[in-house]
Each structure stands twice: as structure tokens, then as C-alpha cells.
Length: 154
Image (cartoon, rainbow, N blue to C red; front, side):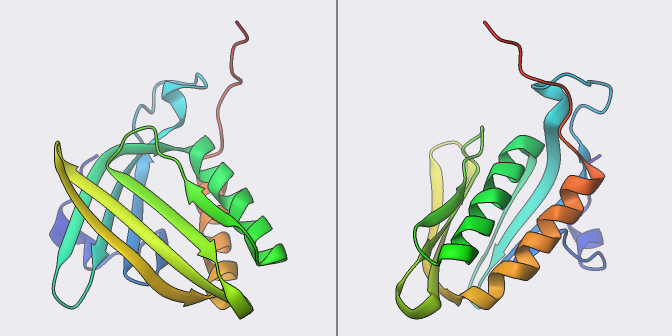
């Protein structure tokens, strides 16, 4: 399910905020319907500034991790305090949005496209108007790739 980078130029991202674009290509393990492997999503994430572009791709996060981030973003939008972050199972991508004063937000994006190589982009200034479209985009992804299965209790 690898998407050619050139193809992405003609496909709108599934999720976009500021310079961060995420394309969800499908489930990483389509044949699996269990809670763990069945929820991994195959994605390409790109962070682009005027001077650089960093890209990661693969089964980077799960539908469950995306749902938790979505719920945290809803809370952040309602209260305008605290933070929302996606805690990916794999370290290639980390995103954190912090509430600041007067409805301002700061976003930190960390991408590690190769082992022991880290690209950090921090303190991208946003405001709360970025949150509703982001939440709607995540809802659309979760509608297409809902959480499968239930966790087994030990």
C-alpha cells in the first residue's frame, strides 16, 4: 500500500494543520481484525516549512491512538487549557498541541524518519480556529477506519 510521494501532490491529505499533512492509505494489516494489529494504519506524514521537508511513512499509529488524540483535541477546544498529543506506538511521529493564553495554541511536531535521526519542529503558533477542522478530518478518518476488536484482559 505504499503511496508514491509524487502521487501525494495530487491527493488531498486526510488530516492537515499548519505545515503538517497526514495521508491515511488504509489499514496496515487489512486481514487482521484484532484490537492490536487490526488497528494499525498505514500513513505518510509530511511536515514542510519554507526551507525543509521531512517525511515519515508506514504503520505509525493506530485508530485507537487517533481516537484518543481526537478526544483530547475536543477537550482542548472546549476548555482552551491543557494539551492534546498523539502518542504513537512507534517513535517516527509525535504531535503535541498546547493551549496558551487568549485562545492561542502552540504545536510541536517531532519526526524521526530514521533510527537515531530526529527532526524537531517546535512552537508553531496557531489559534483555536484550527481545532474544529482538524477534529472533523480525524472524525472522517475514524469513520473510514473504526477501531476493531476489544482489548483482552489479562
